[in-house]
Length: 81
Image (tube, rainbow, N blue to C red; front, side, top):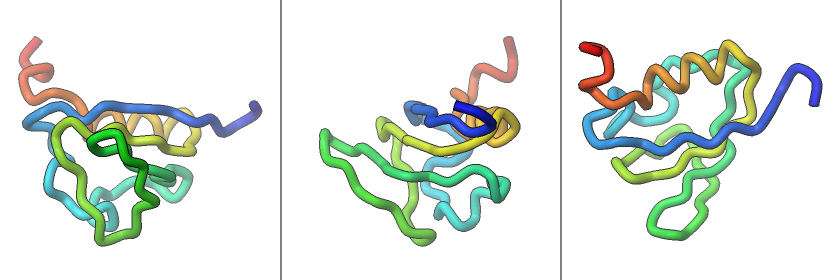
């Protein structure tokens, strides 16, 4: 409702965010990674956590934050389409 929403994104192999610590992703302040689902288990991430291919990311964000998160999590071959 309102300005923020919860979004879910799956991390594909080769995404820019794979192996990068959350604190180094460069996400805007209005995009907070609330949970990472890995192998069916939910973890509450800290800034030093990093993403792996196959992770599901739950974020609380506005439209701009969701757009930036999606860019970091897009498949590598998507940019050539």
